[in-house]
Length: 159
Image 1 (cartoon, rainbow, N blue to C red):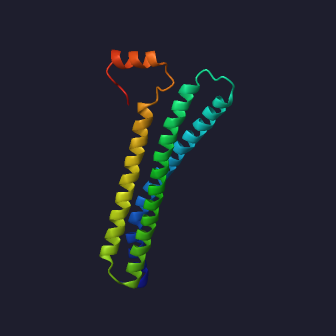
Image 2: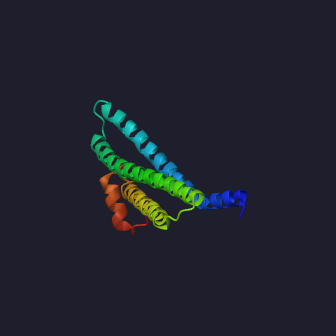
Image 3: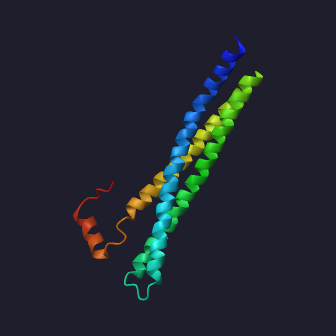
């Protein structure tokens, strides 16, 4: 095998985890978007609380509490996704280095791949928890009577 073929083979080996990195990057984009929406909503609610004698201040405070919980979940998911992306970068670098230097690091490469998968799974689980939490509490602004009537009259058909 000549040198150009060897480099082409190394690049092929290193490309596969790049698709993994792209997926993690897309997840980070989604998570960041959700966090931005949560922050925007918190700012709106905080402005409402600053108005004198806000008629729905108890509801606003409940919604702020929910948003803080959701923000914490998304923040954790973002941190873990960033770690996943970093591990994918290490995986790509290790694949490239091991191919160029002609040494076998199957255990290291496998460890990085498993770590990327585990951190991605944890991040997705946190994302699902946040989505579930947001759906469970999305009717927080409804009057208590409407919520009680809605839940008792119909079976739950939430997303």
